Length: 235
Image (cartoon, rainbow, N blue to C red):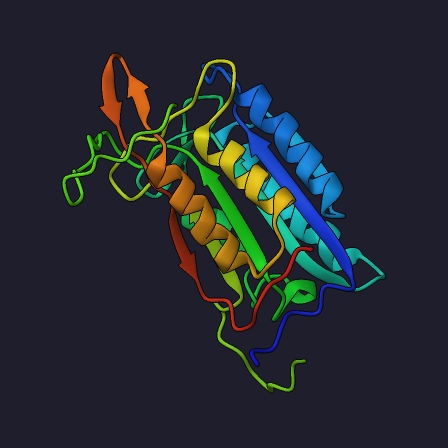
């Protein structure tokens, strides 16, 4: 049996969301707030950060975590903005490097989260490409819209979940929010199981969904990058 992360301590979440010129992001913020409440997270939200503030808010979050008296089990960081591969666009239209944001909480830089799971949810474009989808087998899928280690590597215990694969755009509905955030919230609140299994279900649902953009059918799927060493259960 694979070992699971101890989730008995505090669960902390930070959401940084650019809402400017991103219609529907309020629906995503609302859904995430409800999810974090249900999953027992202490949640902090900042809207419309500049590129510099993305980094400042991450560092503030890290300082707050390291300053806590109690034990911390897990951190979630949700980043929502326009973007390109490896970069997010701040409210000031300047770019911030995702790697610079991710490294703030790594095992070297955040002591309280050392060997603890750090989950990043990134809702942003990663390029300009659009996926029209491929037909499978003639049937087109249609759907309306304990840690005894002396040392550990710097970059373990990280889970990065992107709304789309590298090089591709991400989609958002003007009122309902993004397919990715809404699907992820639904699955994380409805289902129990290790997080990677839940994310497989998110991917399945998104792969089945038929998105229409400017009259053209589009497909989109999230991408998951994990260096988790144990199973992570949120419920």
